[in-house]
Image (tube, rainbow, N blue to C red; front, side):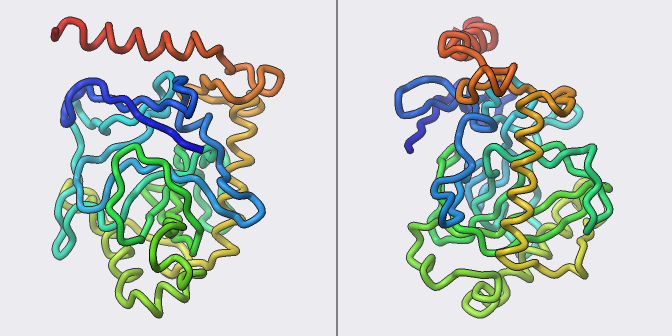
Length: 278
């Protein structure tokens, strides 16, 4: 499967958006329309790259906007950037999300005793390549970290691009510990402290700050996929989330829209926010 992106607006501006298209050139939602699996039999997943490694702009899938383009997060009217927390520079992995997953804010996790954060599940891709914003890659899962962010469960999946030169040698979280010494400790340190420069307290973690293994991680991902299925079929209250999609059949999702409707979302955005700049 191949996907492309179209930029609208200027990077580092409130109007910036990255819209997704499928191989046929039709506009889609990266949240709902990109399949979770690249190879279900091998537990190989798709990952949407929101933030390339070493960059600071806090980009994310806009879960509340039609077609869920990538945009920069905003707090109090200002674009959000993560600080360089010594010794780290920006994000220390390619950071993004697994499509067709959702951490249900109404579900209290039995392990963390906290509810979900209302977003797709997050992924830290630890390969050597610096990915591009909006790139869709295929990853194999190695483990998972259970972060508690302001009282919400915010899972962080550790994965590697299947095309990475080291991918064959990394098959579980113990391999990361052995072959990339210090990497997991740096990951915990980053997530613990990255909000401190903004005046927030340090984040905490379940399981005594330890990573859970591949099998545990895959089960968590599958559970968030089931929460997404309930969301897209309207068995769960979507709240402010926008579930417009083109790939789920109308019989399974009342949010299903036509190709023309999806294109209209893109066209209307382009006109509404950008025509007056021309």
